[in-house]
Length: 65
Image 1 (spheres, rainbow, N blue to C red):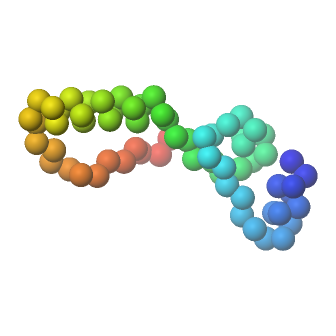
Image 2: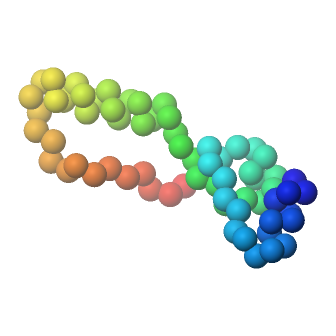
Image 3: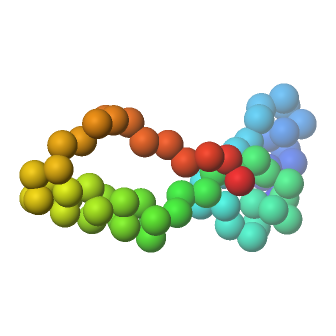
């Protein structure tokens, strides 16, 4: 916690990943990475490829929460 405060005092922005409870306590901007959802989407995509379903959109995104 002290390190984050010291870095912020120098004007450096600090962000986090995986949206951990610690990030919320420190007031960090944090990016969630929903691995279970990503895995489910990958499996569905792979199943479609194996079934010959053409993929229309090569890009995917998750709306912010």
